[in-house]
Image 1 (cartoon, rainbow, N blue to C red):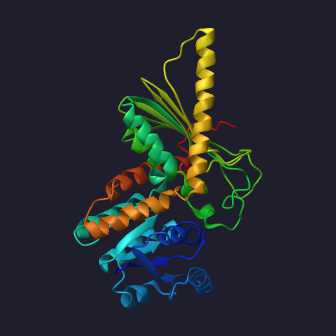
Image 2: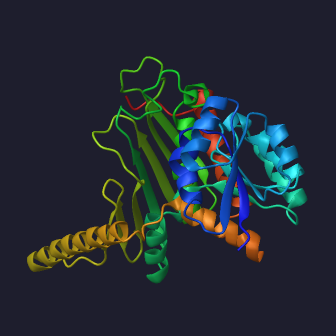
Image 3: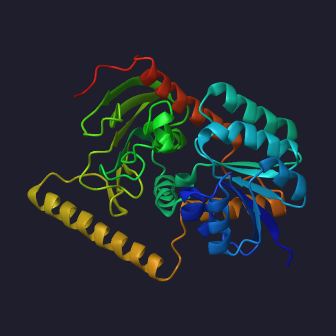
Length: 357
């Protein structure tokens, strides 16, 4: 079977920790080169994953790897627009890490280049949480029960030991919004996927940690969407962290609770408020938690637990081989990124609500 060639651009933690492990599990592709301006990083990554070719010059890569089908950009956000546009102009399909770009203008340029060339190339923005086992399960439950959503609450928790916020020299501190400029896009695109187009209502921030290089480490934002409401809370001062955001979806016929710290899902429907009814309800919730834990353990132990990157990459490869559209378009990613940037603009321009310190 002829495999689709892939090149990795950026040999840091994102490439080595997320992208390459996912690509290596997809039999239809072969990673043929890695590119990084730091040759040491590129060579170390190539050796670790058995990648035959190393580059330090992106233009040279595009010139010499003409047969490459996918360019996977794992570089910091400031490079996303120029690199992705160059790759698409050169005829390559592009996988682009989030956030799409750090300005509306650059985001429009990326989307515009894709739309001009969409008959020849494909563009995949890595909004990976949409394709994680957790979100796929949440969506399945909501669709199966035909839930009319009223409100969604999303919480992302991290400890002060978070590797990005605790590193004074990390590039995230140069982004608008600091650490939020890297992670806020995740709950924004999740909320948009559940509620639809978002209108920002209020944004509140606070600093509760001790890092003097961090301006804010707590964020709470509220949104409305066609009569529905949503909220996002992000903290870097939590005693524990979520591997996937904790979510509570309020619907007319049920409440869905997903605990992102242990990946358990429970559903609450009509409550019989009698004493026996409350006891039965508590037992039912406990049973759901045990069942959810057992299902997760089985998937992990049997290798059936696939992270969002792998699921999304498989869909992207399938779209190239079979001409299908992936179930999440660059246009949808652009709308989420636009909302994300508008929240950051409020922070940077001091337009947020009063601090909740």
